Length: 473
Image 1 (tube, rainbow, N blue to C red):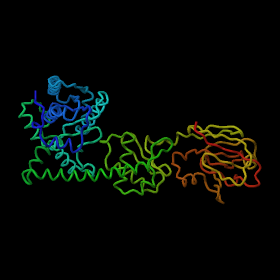
Image 2 (cartoon, helix red, strand yellow):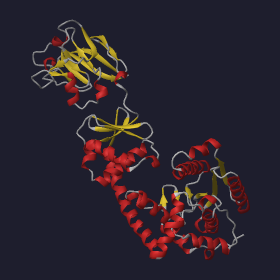
Image 3 (cartoon, helix red, strand yellow):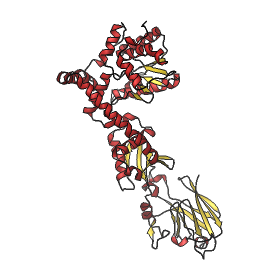
Image 4 (cartoon, helix red, strand yellow):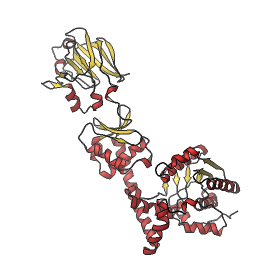
C-alpha cells in the first residue's frame, strides 16, 4: 500500500486541484475508472490526497463491450483493484445491442455520451457531488488539435475545462509521461486499451502522427503555448457565458406552453451572445450536446433576422424552431393544417361553444352597456348587443372561409380575414379554418382572439352589450 503524502504525487496535480478549488471537505467523489494508466493514476493520487481534502471516493466503470475478451479482462482488473484498495465500485456492461448502437455514427462521440450518462446516473444514485475523470494534458492537446482541424467555434477551442458542472479533471495540466513515471515508481499495474495503439481513429492519428511531428518541428513548448492560448479563450468564453445567461433570462418566454425566444431580443444581441442564447435554449429543450452544430444555431439566428412570419427550421430529434408572432417557438413540429377541420355551431347568448381541436371555448353573456366607448380585446371583447343580435338571439361560431371579410376595429375598409391574420403574424397552420363569431347573415363580428369588427363596437348609442370570452378547455 502506498504511503500517504504529496511527495509521491506530481506537483502539477496538486496545483490544478487547488487552483480550481475542486474539492471541499465532505465531498463524495465518483472517479471514472477504466483500468488504463490515466484513470489508475487518478484513483491512486486521489486516495493519497483523500485525507488532505476530506473527500470520500467511489469508483465507476462502464464496459462498452467493444473488444470481446479484452473488455471482460479489463472489467475483472478494475473490480480486483477496487477490492484491493478497499473502495466501493459501480460497474455496468453494455448489452450487445447497446454496443452495436455505438457504431452508428461517430463511435467516440456516442461512447462519450453513453459514458457521461452512466457517470451522472451513478453519481446521483450513490450520492456523489463530484465526478472526477482522468483527462490529461496530452488529452487536452489532442482535443485542441482535433477541433482546430475538424472545425470548431470559440467554445470548442476553450478545450476541456478543468471544472464543468459536476465534472472535475485533476490531471488536466499533467502530462501523461509524469503519470506513467508515478505508476512506475510505485509499481502500480494498469491495463492498456489496444484501440488506443492503432491509427484508425482520428484521435489516434493525431496522437501517433501529428503530435510527434509538431514536437519535432517546434519542440515540446509548442504544446504548452497551445494550451495556454486555449485557457485565454476559455476565460473570455466564461465571461460571454455569463452575459448570455442574463440575455437568455430576458429573451426566454413561453408561447402556448412551449419554450420560446423573443425575436426582438435576439435581434438586439451581439452575434456571440445570440449564438450562446440559442444554444442554451436547445440544451434546455433536451437536445444532446453532440447533436447540435454551428449550422443549427446559425439557422435559428437567421429566423430571428428574417421578416418572414412563417420562417421555420428542422432541428435534431424531430424538433422544430418556428416563428410564432413575435417569438421563435421550439418543440415538436407544428400540427398539420388538417389538424384544424372546418366547423360551425350555434352560440346562444348567454351560452358557450367549444372550438374543435383547439382546446378553446367561447363564452357569451349579456351585460349592461359600459360607460364610454370600449375597444375590443384579445381574449375578451365587448360588442354592441343591438348590432350582434340584429338577426336573432343566436350567434354563429364557425371556421373562416377564403372569402370572409370584416372591418377591423379602428379601420374604415373591408379586409380579407386571411390577409388580416397574416399581417398579425398568426402562423400559417393556425390560420387554417380560423374561428370566427358571425351573425346569422354571415357578418363577421369577431376574429376570435384578434379583433372585433368596427361596426360592432360599443358607442354612446349602443343598447346593451355582449361579452365574448375565449377560455382554455
